[in-house]
Image (cartoon, rainbow, N blue to C red; front, side, top):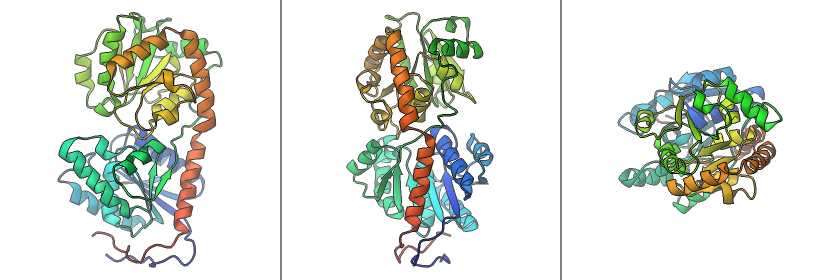
Length: 400
């Protein structure tokens, strides 16, 4: 279908309406979109979020000032893709955005197929789709990303490592890198004294008796799924129990792997479920760990650091860039290596004073480098930059 847009911009276009097309609707992607919607609505833009029902995104985006329109789409590719593309095209025709921002693999696939360059488009992978699968499916996902990059005015990565990974796999794109950020006024220590802060948070949480007191507490926040690697952490925990028998582990989150993980969990592990507010869990921790198999740049470590807690993370995309300078030696482990993870956990938990020092440096680092206002300002600046550029003559059709 031909659009009414002119084939070139003789002068910079005014940015009035932004459409965020999103799937998934929970976890870090949802929080990033909510932060963008809040900042852009506060700046006077008309912000529309198209997303499936379920999860937290629809309610959170609405509360942030966005108009929310249901877009029916599953999380993974499948036979429903043609209907998802048509649904995206109808939504885009209805909204007529000045700019389309598609988030993660599914929305990136359906949105770019629907628009094919007729609307200025930013694609933000939030971790590459081909890292999440294997075999023929990974090869197909990579082929699509190489092809689909032509229909993005900018591929927006959340870390330099994510961009380098895309380039290394042969994706030729117009790249931008804007690191994730967190609300440092929301995520902060509750008390200037670390010990009092930790004790107050533990008193606030519904913890079993064995998790109270001064026993070392490790917290892992994330969806219970293969990406976040809680199965690796549980294997490491079995090894750790030999050296730090009084240590406790809380897994905060829910997801498809919950029952399987429970069945194989060693002693000293609490499955806390999903939490509407994760700050008490972060503040209650001596150490926050995220043993992911892949990421773009995970939010949970940034949130933990903003709360003054040290983090131990697997060395995947974005991890090194998240940590304060010099902490990689202690706070990075190879992905999918339970023994290395257990050894790092044991070493850190044996040094309470070191944990306190690492946490204080982490807090200052988060406040200096990962303020979400810097992130949202940079993204909106990217939009204005793109709208100031002429568009090619051959990018003028939207799928029916």
